[in-house]
Amino acid sequence: MRLRLATYSATDSQAWTGLTGPRFQLLITRLWEVRPDGGRGRPWDLAYADRVLLIVLTNPTMLQLAALFGISGSAVHRVITGFAPHLAALLGPPPADKREPWVVDGTLIPVHDRPAPPSPTTTGAV
Image 1: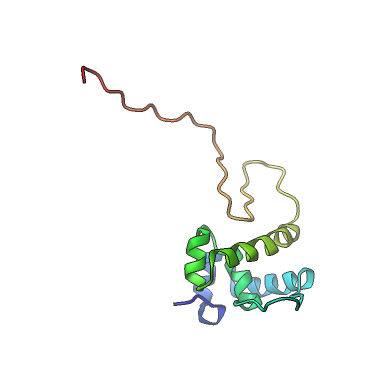
Image 2: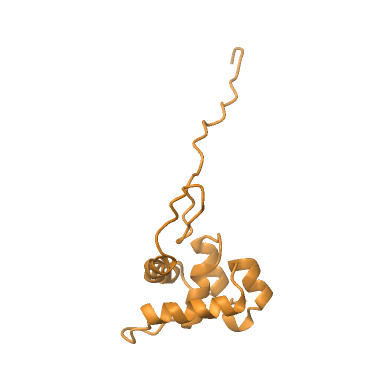
């Protein structure tokens, strides 16, 4: 099964991206304004809207995205590196309050400095 926007329902959009259908369409339009398809080189395996869907899905790894969309991991990487700066520019600067999450490229960043749990020690003779 290949995930495509054509087979994607409004409830899927809300659950997987946090965006409603109209908000997702607005995002596609705004991204097209700042980064339209150049038309040079090999054509993409994914349509423009499907590439936007790929980048806004929350929390899957690159391997999971590749499997979901039926493309290679390197193609997923090219989509993410092509869209992430433009998506970040649309979102504006990060919030001043550091407690507010602001994740663009899916990188998991530790938010608390917690000491590692002590490892179990073995006692007695070996």
